[in-house]
Length: 299
Image (cartoon, one colour):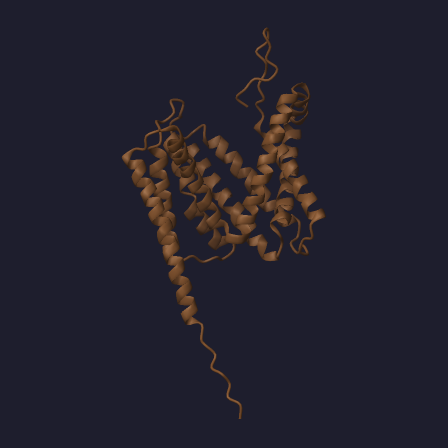
């Protein structure tokens, strides 16, 4: 969306500006991949009503809209803090959606991870000059983004109780996402224009296809992670991904890490070690609590 297609010596070319059309392409390819996988590989018997997938799809669409709209009305530090602080809202939403309970140490480590990632991201570089001032409307949109995003992963986590596979979940969610996105594009009259742009520029079609393939592969990992480890752990992984990406960039390209950024990394690793230690102690406590059956004496 930042490059020109069809540029010549006499023409500057044109840019593609409709992100919703790209989202539709991603969803369509993911739907095809999941559908083919379900046909070729044996899947468990599907027990969830199809309409329940629509809730996750709709909340995903709404969270994306709130996120992109909020960028127009909030400052860069506010964006960073919102993205790094999603773990605890996801845990609280889990209590509402699936009645999932968490230990006190899980809330503590989640808070430490959010603080550490925020410290590192805010110190990783200067604030962009084009960053707008934070307004009340921007904060409301950010709150909507966090709420809808928290609901999406927790609702998907709750659906896995119906004993479905991660690929079946991927198919159901993307089916309704395609319907919602296509309906929005048709209402705006943008579907035909996006198709024409793709027909005019084969290079754009190749780039959009590559983007969709990466998105579909990413979804395979996303739904598997939610199904195996839950929504809270998935959110922690996605939060840490931002910090690790910048840390890797600093190591590869020789960018300096500030003292605050170093402290943030230390807080994150301390929280992760505390989480591993607490889980280990919990498993030992559970093993000790299991009574040992005494052998039955024969008379």
